[in-house]
Length: 261
Length: 280
Image 1: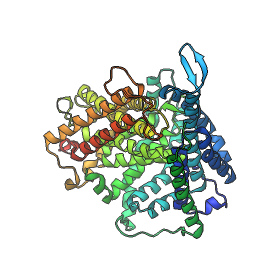
Image 2 (image 1 turned 90 degrees about the vertical axis):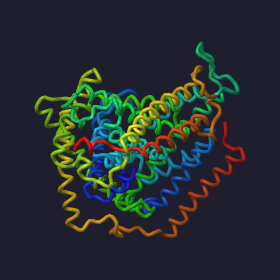
Image 3 (image 1 turned 45 degrees about the vertical axis):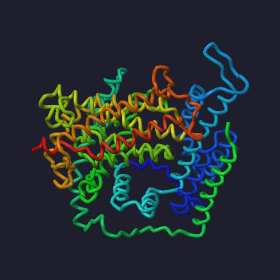
């Protein structure tokens, strides 16, 4: 089995100790604040706050690992959005293709910061919440047990299949098969000998795993208990309240006309 | 549509959901395929999973694809408000296959999707299904991210549609040819697992109307959405992108998406499936 590629960082911080539900409420508040404002100076506040929190909880290695994606999405958004909004304000750049105005730049910057805030906010959540806590949190939010069980099982199985995929890749390479080719069709077709063993190994286990579950009295309709039950403490109530206040405050400020380009 | 709920009563269907989700993630992460924009998008071989598993595992593949995409977002560091639309988009990516196979009237091959009998007609039917499934997935995600004001519809809609369609068209037929008979002999096709009264009850005419409607609405939603996003002159719906819904996406785009999504939901609700009858 390969090591789990989880982004969870096992630390003893305030955010780590919180219940998954209160963290979700907090992060929703951050998302709403990043969503309702368009002015990059206003969007920068939730972005900077989540980034600082991420670093504080030990998520810097995660951010470094994904920084390429964050930067790429930021730049793509910044390049694309001026073409999809109207101009305004002072012209900043005049080219034969058109003029780039101050409003277009601010609009695009705000949108790119929003993308970054969403990614960093999500990263903060998965850095401080283990897979088991995510599943238990989903259950305590009222999602059906069978659904939570499927998510939990998929989270447990996927590193195994990831390991199988890598083993199959190495085995096929030892036989002289390496996926590749400049033509995308050839490249994609070269993956078929790798995918079939992964599929069939995975699917072959469905019957036996289902029988093993039923032999242990698996029933999705009964009330379930969790070994690792997280209490909803006063700190959780305060955090959830802060998240809701953040969302309501951001919407109220936006309705008053703040934070727009 | 009832089978999407009742399948959760069957242990093997639940295990299939988990396995489809896990295989989807396991193949999305290590096999990055043909990179189009570094860090943003690549033609991934894993994108074939929802389409071919949808044909074989029906509702389990729809849920599995949705959960697999959510887990991929969590592990790829892209978990956020957009993940909700990724969940719904991938759910329909896996759902369309079994709703359409055999229900496309003269365009259907009327045989099991194993590419042994009438391979050319099966390929035509598979192409239509891959295009419809990719289009509805792309339209839902692009609409959602436009609603969130993250990317214009035309940017993501085009990229997701091409990624999904190319992977499904190139890898789908050979993978079905090689895996379908084995999975059938294991007794894991969805008509073998679901109770007969859990399968959707729809007459041939209604099932065909719903399937053709899903195909047309999926393609039309994506095409019109891209046209609106680009502000094409000759498109009657062409909108000023400055007309925004709050600070999210263009109002017209959001309205079109809401209507198209309701139609897709309605057609899904009245649709049937055909594989159980083809199996006899």
